[in-house]
Amino acid sequence: MVYTIKIEPEAKLDIQEGIDWYNKKESGLGRTFHVAVKAHLKRLTTNPFFQVRYDNTRCLPIKKFPYMIHFTIDEESLIVIVHAVFNTARNPKIWKD
Image: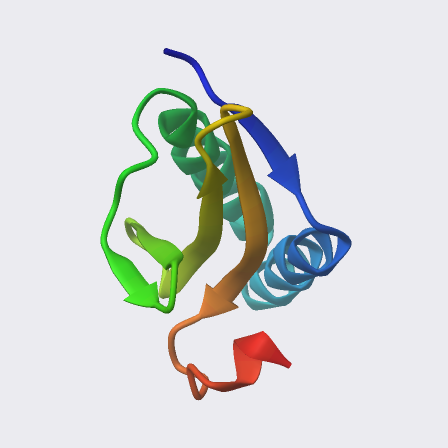
């Protein structure tokens, strides 16, 4: 079973902010972050059943970066909805806002 990934606009903004921040720290690091995010999103297409953290929201940590992908699953439609790509150094309650 293959799931479709739907990235909410807020999550796209999170990803872009992460790319920009890492590029300011080191040239090319933003690209490395983006590649890692895309690889983890691809992983969700075949196995989205990661730990439920908040209500029915699941989280997938991004290896080598302090970020988690926050998502829900529409099992009926086979869609993974990405709500946030959140920096784990931030207060976890902020992402809902």
